[in-house]
Length: 286
Image (tube, rainbow, N blue to C red):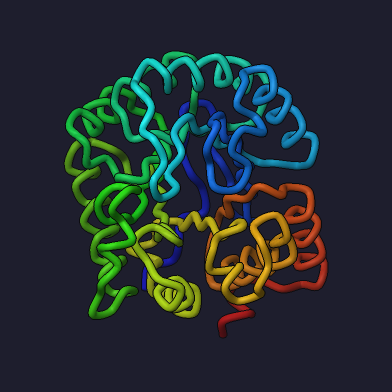
């Protein structure tokens, strides 16, 4: 197995991955599954960016479209109005800024506003998305696995072997990006926990996560407050802090380089203790 790359090249930053990084979630939406509406105004979302950086976020991830099942799809103009002002503020905070979008128009506008990373749940499959990344030769990208659309994805959660199929999909999408001129060091992969997957699928992806380290690409994993954690613990979405932190540590122990979370301070603290104890991903999985 090829060793994972130790950095992620983005527009303004070459992110060192020698220690795990924490990506803080900023949902500028009225209907996200966990915190929908809490940061729906630009002012609230900007304050959220400030707060997450103060908590220790290494990266900010700004999204203007909910991907929960059944969520209404905003128009392009709605998504732009939600995202761009927040990006313009976030890029002043001296941390890499990611934009969670699959729309080429939003990608282009966000990059024009100074964003460093495109985080695409459709893995650059929408027409024009690859063109945007090809036109911006230093921008980082995260390619995520999902089947269908958020409204249909759970009906498509069927796999002979979820780990092998997710691995093959991610390897293929990375190859497609490479063929379009996206440099290897710009690419990070995400197995898409909760996207077109059952509880058993998600847990299998965590248990066998090291099999997803495709050709050395770093892994970004998002377990924060997911429904599988609720199924395991019996906790409502607002009561999943401990479960979310535990899942983040388990993901890091199995090779994740970046964890995407709502609760930044708690995750940063947990990782600090984990490192102080001398634990590393290689030791945990030896």
